[in-house]
Length: 161
Image (cartoon, rainbow, N blue to C red):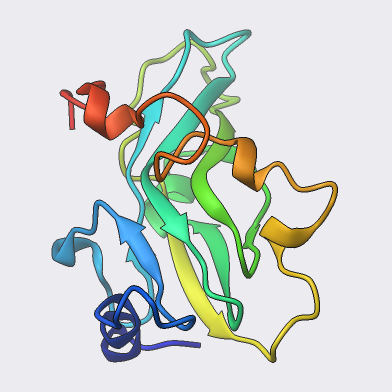
């Protein structure tokens, strides 16, 4: 597991270095001893109490790191359940998508800004990274100005953050 110091070192590598980690936008206040706290926004009105959230942060993962996404302890203390792919694969590029639900009162409004955190782990070199898989959708997602319209950040959609 990477420490805060190791995460910072990975973030400050030259952009041509294949071991560079990108978190954009990066907020130093969100960096914990071994994790990074994510910010999310709700992308559409809830359906039957289920909210679809998207991370404000975009990720570009190097080939030798994997991210493990978890609910922060305060989220589970508030009775929130989430569905998401818990891993950010080596080679992934883009924003993360989550579905969240509060079963005790599904129509109750609650803050969705600070529910998740990600921890980073070093892995051995992979043969085929996420962005190289034929079934990958990574390169079709919004983010890093690759193939879709400008990112949410650039469009000002994060004004509430």
